[in-house]
Length: 261
Image (cartoon, rainbow, N blue to C red; front, side):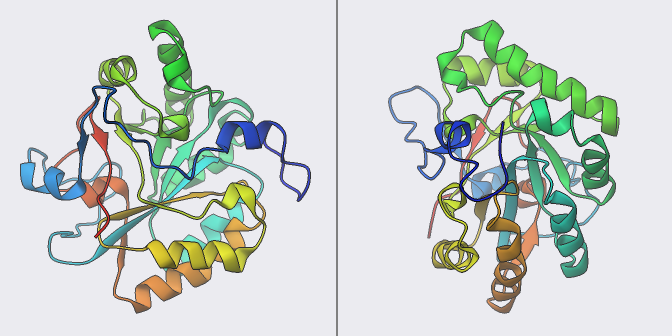
């Protein structure tokens, strides 16, 4: 489905992810968004951040969340090595078919190493094109597959291309899933140039930001070490999405999206 070498991954993957660089404009579709700051100020959580045990006060330090979509893939183990070396947590929005079911040992490793395991649907269908049953099938199949591997169902999901509506929100709430969008994207689906990916991320970086990358593309994982190093140099603290919202907790059905400075 998603190919890994330059020139091979243009057909299906381009169709699926071509709009991923665009932040969804939710005005007019009846779905409100919540910022990380609003989530923190709203509280309501127990101070625990998803599957992680770290305690980071993102109201006091400059936090940023590194997230990866549509994996795991062949390069994900190398990415996990980098994150371990750099001591950086991340949030992985995993795709079910040909990814979770193909790399169960990688899914388990993601969870075992303290990263947040999240849902990116089963086949990357655009959820707003589906009826309620179709949305439920896309999300619940990945929920069940992840739980079978890790023992825990995800509490976060990212709708493909960021497209959501009232039906998607209702089904997400039913399944215990909060929706997480992003504020920083490198358009890494359109280039194998790691230096360009790095530059795009660094140009957009901001406090409370959520970075969208894809660990299935050839240029992405090689860009990650220098992205991490530079953002640390700038004073950013890397957190998972639940940590970004703590002490608030992501509410099922709600849509979370940072505001740029």
